[in-house]
Length: 150
Image (cartoon, rainbow, N blue to C red; front, side):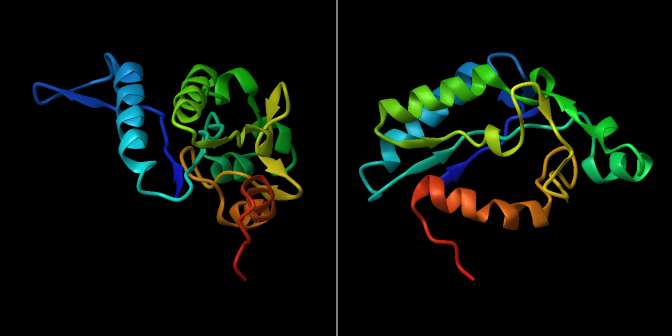
């Protein structure tokens, strides 16, 4: 089983009202509960860490800055949810689940470029560009031991 979640701006319900209060704790509790139930049933579970999030829609920014791709880069500290990813790794490892940190696929130690290998990394603020997903298939295969399908 291959798992991946997305975090930016989620909400939880508190007596029917949306709130972000207590969200990190709720996410951790939910992940822990899900992995506790899932791992005995699955032969293998791999959790992909959360991705880096650009400061704005990637393709829109690149269209606005066709001569300066670097204007669309996002600083690492703005793009990466470090504490969240550390929590997910900790919970995964507590359940014997493999954790794959995908941040190196998107960022250097300081910057998360809008374009890598000539390919736009994000379609918008929440989704990886489809061509970049294909580009990453080898990295995913290598990090998980899974073989990409043609």
